[in-house]
Structure formats: structure tokens, C-alpha cells
Image (cartoon, rainbow, N blue to C red):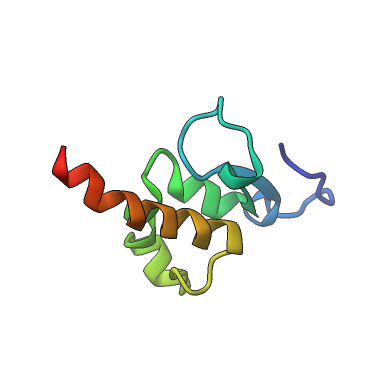
Length: 88
């Protein structure tokens, strides 16, 4: 979903919906974040943690402290699951 922008405006700043987990079939409040098209495009199909360590995030000052609350919750959930995944 892309919000309307003024003619001649940059698409990079248009608000878009990003799937936190890269699965378009998961459309829940916990898996959707509103972000600019530039961030959405830079994340692409990367996992959230990998994206946060990307050059794009480093260049733009994006960290796990500066992201939206829904993204922080997803990061915390991933941290809780990580030890369980290592055991299997």
C-alpha cells in the first residue's frame, strides 16, 4: 500500500507498508510496519536483524532503539526464539 504524494515529490519519502517477516500472507499488526519507501526498498527480502546491521541502516542512523515499537517487539520475539532454534 502506498499513500498518495504530491506530484513531483520523491517516492523515497512516501509511506509504505513493510512486512517484518518476509511473508505477504502474514498480514497482522505484529507483522506490518509503516515506513518510508526507501527503508522498505533497502530491507527487501532481508531478515529484520540482517537489515538492521546493513550499511543502509548504519548510514541513516537506524538502530534497534530508533525503530517503531512493532519492530522492537518483533526483534524481542526473535531473540526469545533464537536459543530454541539452536537446540534443534
